[in-house]
Length: 176
Image (cartoon, rainbow, N blue to C red; front, side):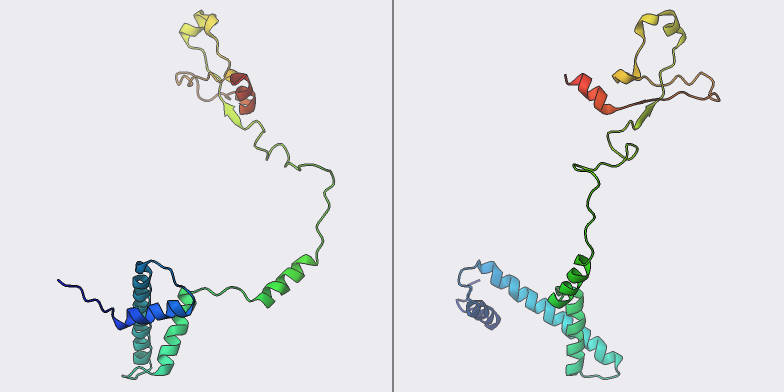
């Protein structure tokens, strides 16, 4: 197929719009993308206006149907920024209240229960098996990070002791 050197009228119009806005340097695909956007927008507005006119009991599309379809489409697709006057009113009302001065200087941390540096891990200590009772040399300390799974043969009804430790202490010992 031989390509024609002439561009379609819609492409020429988009190029003239870009030129009138002062845009001289752009990729050729920008024009194609803008043409596609225009086509999609117009077809959706006409489709919506056709629905509005049929809902009103008319067979022909009226100018009011097109305006309503455009308003509905723009409200759904293009979000307008908040008006400057309204933002100024919000800022004025918000800035009327003064900030509280801190009671002490420095970084204010939450109480130790809500702090990430608190002891927040609970591990059940390893119970000794029959073999381990005979060999006491291989005792492990859960605070050193060596924690074995519990033996399920023991009684499950008694209160299980738990050990809390901080990971920061283990990290200090490990990386020193």
